[in-house]
Amino acid sequence: MKIISDPHSGAVARLGSTAMSAPALHSMRSTRSREVVLLALCAGLFVLALLGPRVELPAHYHAFADARAWQFLPNAKDVLSNLGFALFGVLGLLRLRLIDRAIAWTVNRQMAALFFLGLVLTALCSANYHGQPDGAGLWLDRLGMVVAFAGLLGLATADRVSDRAARALAVLMLVAGPAAATTAMHSLDQLAWVVVQFGGLAILVWLVLNKPVPGAWPVRWWLVIGAYVLAKLFELGDAAVFEWTGHWVSGHSLKHLVASCAAWPVLIALRLLSAVADVAASRTPSRDGVPAGGRWL
Ligand SMILES: [Zn+2]
Image (cartoon, rainbow, N blue to C red; front, side, top):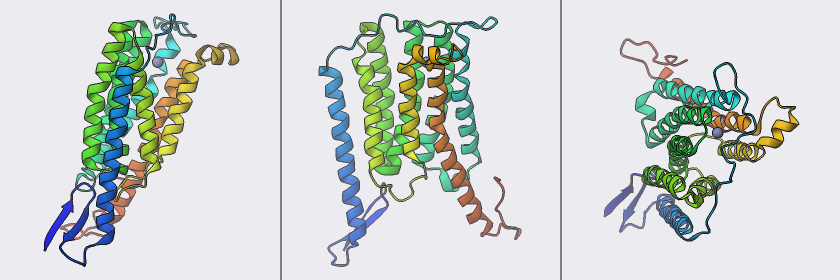
């Protein structure tokens, strides 16, 4: 009898035996089919980026609705509203350090670290761009976002498909994202960048429509997607929101704040994982007989 196991799904099956675990075999097949669909989606988006129609950058793209300065800071609210990304990014990285490594040092954790690091980079790169909006600044702004996208997509893929697919998709995003941003800067054709952004969102929606795999993090992914979509709507309504609010705040400033809130469900999931780890630790006496729980509360 031959025993085969899938380290990515955790499924185990015994070949040559009528006692083969049907659920395990089903899990392995499900993982494989999801990997194939994910690969096909990525291939389709690649073809679209190569053969799709040209997408021009709007003529006044760098002219945002709220250009008011505060003290020495130009475009102050568009710059300062990036603090949300920095706050959630730092909180996430600190929370990850507090989780018991033995329990949580997984691909999920690596992807979450990439996501929170990406948020910190996004805060820095976006604040830099809005301080003096131009093509080079936009390119750098997009590079920061790519790191966050890669981590977020990787985390969702680890939760819904497999660890190896999560790593592959994160690496693909870290390669395709900068390539698309660089192409957009040099040729002014935004198609590849649009495909990266909206294609990434489409893949995220597809991932969330699948059942979680064993060991998935309790992230409420629809809240993440909702925050992302709402942020894009605020971005499109930059000037309109500025008018509606009596020039109090612009759509783009709100876009930064709402987009940063996409990290909230991931932080809540980390809190839940910490609580579960604490309960498990409190039931395991340490060497001196004292329960090990409560360390991270
Ligand atoms: Zn911005």
